[in-house]
Length: 101
Image (cartoon, rainbow, N blue to C red):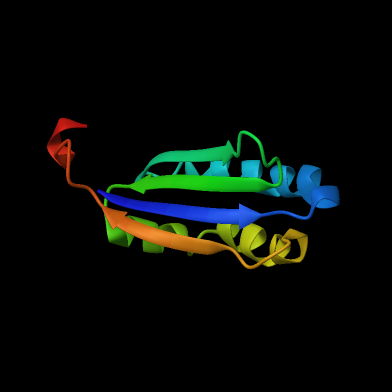
């Protein structure tokens, strides 16, 4: 499994717009055959901070995700809504084993 975590800090006045674009991307991504999860999380006390937690079967499935129209829409619209550049970290699964999911 291939996991991507993206940290985002959104301009406070742009949160509603950010959420509209991000939920569109997340809901469309969840329909991709290689996408197992796509969670949009908001920081408990800092309401302008978000985390995208994405789980794909393989690295290639993530690359395929980055070629989808909904990803392009999100990628092109969201940067102007952010207070700072997004940062992403990629992980590979250790436990439970992929076959146990």
